[in-house]
Length: 497
Ligand code: B12
Image (cartoon, rainbow, N blue to C red; front, side, top):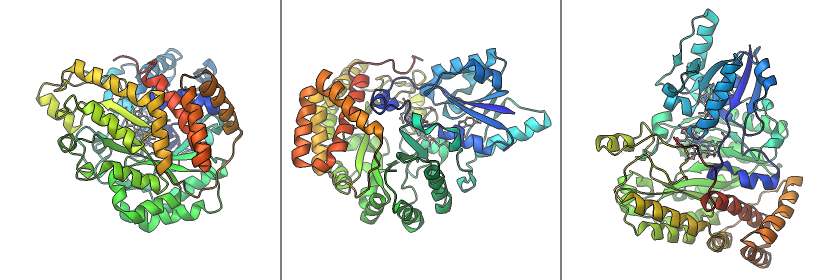
């Protein structure tokens, strides 16, 4: 069998980082870990090729070569996925689809031959066995969760590293919390399932041996879901693995209660976790209680963020407006919070209800579910009828984004962060692309850009006060350029549903 792994194109969104990637001459943020994992489960004698449409278009040679196309996508990639599937079908290539988009919406894809849904560790072997017997069903799904200690290492050798900014690995799936709007527990369960240290270090080693020296994103839903295992086994192994290596800084997603455990914070910083994404959601205690985000309540959230920054861990934050308890004053409160905390990369979205979540069920019962999700949670759309007047909500949301990504406030936040931040003692890895980014930032931001005054002020400030943080300052200036294209100037965004 000749299998073509197809990963549809992301639209130009907050998380695509398209405008920032140009500065380092990369085509995409990271390769599709789901497809690379699926490739490792296929029979070893099958031939496999990757067509990541974020890197290159689907070619007629691909389609002539392939017997079957394995397509994976998130909802936000729906448009490109539909076009890729149509091209495969037209070329007479069988289409097998899996991953989050199809698990949520498979009924909307009539021309897909076979759906292998949920986690492939369970459903793919059933499909392969049926294929062997010549009795293939149309849909393979399960409500069970596999033990990922038996998941094979992703096949990174299928990837051309030079196109990507980071590599992804996964340590765990699932999250112990049950926030009302989040679908993670529906998709992956509440009991975090983890890999073991040997397995994880083996995956990192194979990336290292293949020559990867850039950043590594642990794509866990909540990396600290099993703190005991982290402290006793995983982090000590990662700390040992890092010794003598340069580059390879880690990032991941965690819940805010990480700050309650000094030992864990210290070990994560030592292991090389330089950035964490945290769902902060809102500074409003009532809204936090409403969405069952109890781990965020009863604490000083600004102080919690600063505690991590001082430990050498940058915090990126997710924020939501449009909770039932939100009043129109929420927009200014969010702005004040974001500015004070120095969370430079702040992803703010309107409350949405993904299918299967407790929020979806509650609002369905209240007759407040409207349509499907666009899949892009920063496009100002929502599939719910909010309590606040929708025009007030959307106008307040637009004002909030305009404020936090306006150069003057964005750069102010960068300095707030750099003042607090104590960089970890990690050896940097030099790449020629960084030099290119440096010169390009001078031209695009410092000469042509509307932010040129703030850009040079940041240069001056950082060189006088925190010269060691100069690379971080330039990186954040470049991120700001991307966020501004998305949040202020408008972009192609997700295709309308
Ligand atoms: C890494 C990640 C990203 C990366 C993507 C990098 C990349 N190149 O793919 C980044 C940061 C860019 C990203 C962004 C976003 N993401 Co995201 N992301 C994830 C995350 C955390 C991990 C995905 C992953 O790699 N998992 C590890 C692999 C091994 O698992 P997997 O991909 O699910 O694959 C398994 C199965 O699904 C299946 N499978 C997958 N594909 C296929 C294909 C075939 C043919 C078969 C047989 C099986 C199969 O087999 C695999 C092994 O079990 C997931 C959450 C999660 N735990 O999955 C969210 C998730 C995929 N993201 C989601 C969303 C909503 C987004 C964003 C809109 C923003 C946001 N709120 O997070 C943006 C959209 C992107 C954009 N540009 O606008 C949703 C998708 C929901 C949906 N139904 O589409 C998820 C599920 C999180 C959630 N809470 O719902 N994301």
